[in-house]
Length: 493
Image 1 (cartoon, rainbow, N blue to C red):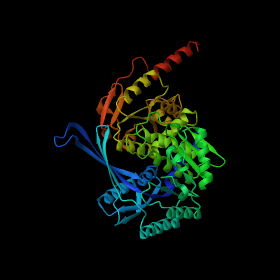
Image 2: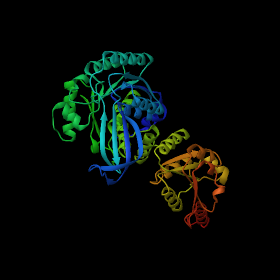
Image 3: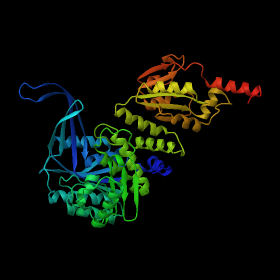
């Protein structure tokens, strides 16, 4: 599957305008992490000394978190208990920018909570707090009224995230699908269980291979021919328009009565598949609701899932992360290139900071890139997780180095830099110094090469610390230019 400019345009300009409702079984995932060094004297069990606790959105709420990460306007509908875990869930949702007015407070059940105790890298214990079962009539009515109000105000799409806890009963699910079709908006199902009759008529369904087999009572291998055959059987049997099978290391396949789209997996390393299905569902529906073709939607969903499985634990993809990934892929395919905007790098830097990942920043003209530059940039990247380059624009270079410079256009300089494996992002700046850009990014480490002193570096007050790296001796752009000029003067070139 090939990316194209429509995908980057969608992620840059349109995704933020989308209004998506998510309805389903919301959960709170709680992690208690510690270290095990001894066995309890009271019983033959390990003692885990807890050093960190973390709470994240789970179930249908993780689908909403992924949509919020893409910067869609997200509305969450579901049922929780009237308890402290509901309060924590609401707090996390509001911090993520999710509208949670559709979370009905139930007196008859608890907020679904999954508590995991982790020792080192090993999960030692999981405890589930929940009551399952169909909703009370009043709870269903409250959710229906909530959704009708949203539809009247204008929605672009609906995701039903079913974890078989009670919200997505057959009658309610069929009612949602009917309302979506009346409003002429797509509805996507993230399914659970083997009874797909309750999903009849939906526009998209996103099972994994195991769920696909269960729905049809099969035990088929994860091979293209088998997947396509099963998906087409589901299309016909359940009246589903598009079946999108997430296939782990084999990527993703969309199948309907006339079309088959295979998109290969994109992750180089897989650390944790938790939540990858939620990410795929959220990205796919957002793309379709935003007017993207099925090929483009599957491509985006697959790349988003590839980002998530390379992280440890439940993780919601972010728009600027996905945009950067798509831009890099376009570059590899030899397509048009553009640098990140200041807004995009600010959002991307915020994401990296939130994940505790070290950002290294350096700047320069990088006119006629040579081995000295590359060695310097490799040393800079070795200091942290992400290397961002602030690149002087053509106008800025002319002011600094004279009317004959730069020799290479700013976008060509940017593209060559971005092609280096050690570079994570390139951003142009028009000013004589990168101070305002450094202030925007707030890097952990500000790097400069040469004989500078830390006190001389522009923007140093907005960085965590400063590092001065030595240049590779014998290499300089000026030296290259002078050598070419000398050879030209002697008539040797």
